[in-house]
Figure 1 (tube, rainbow, N blue to C red):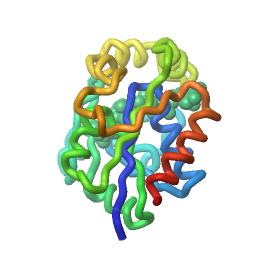
Figure 2 (cartoon, protein in one colour):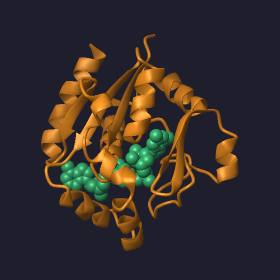
Figure 3 (tube, helix red, strand yellow):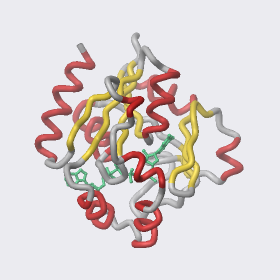
Length: 185
Ligand SMILES: Nc1ncnc2c1ncn2[C@@H]1O[C@H](COP(=O)(O)OP(=O)(O)OP(=O)(O)O)[C@@H](O)[C@H]1O
Ligand SMILES: Nc1nc2c(ncn2[C@@H]2O[C@H](COP(=O)(O)O)[C@@H](O)[C@H]2O)c(=O)[nH]1
């Protein structure tokens, strides 16, 4: 079985998690559950959306990579990756652009990158408000260096990423159907 990994990246609020959930629902593509030390959001479930960790428990994991994002630690483990690949040949993973670069280097045969963006940056903030992120969390995030970095496709992902402008959900679903058909063929 040829293992494939769709790495979904882009700015906060660009729709990475939404796309990943849709791929699971519409195409039975399992998502790699990653680890974080940030607090759980109101609708998140431990072990489903993330493994919620303390800095000490995160340090005990066998991580492929880890990053600091807006003041918290995030990391993806070999265990979670293997668990997803046991379920299907093609799996998805949501990471920041630094993580996407690491995956391209670590899994050059298996990984392809989907970079999500929007036409108007203000839409990202509206979406975080709609997601019910607290005003404090939104402010902290949009002032972070990571937020500014992930607004644009980084040059190291140039030529290696499919760019999808996620303004309109119906258009996005059509683009995803085309992408998944290409990956599966
Ligand atoms: N095409 C779209 N049109 C309008 N709203 C959208 C669209 N795609 C996603 N959203 C909404 O935007 C919000 C943010 O989406 P999501 O959580 O998937 O973003 P994300 O990129 O995973 O963000 P983060 O990196 O902060 O976790 C959600 O409320 C989601 O329902
Ligand atoms: N490099 C990694 N990035 C990750 C991982 N898990 C999530 N993320 C990215 O962090 C930010 C913030 O996520 P949020 O859920 O707090 O909004 C976002 O860009 C995620 O894609 C990981 O294991 N490695």
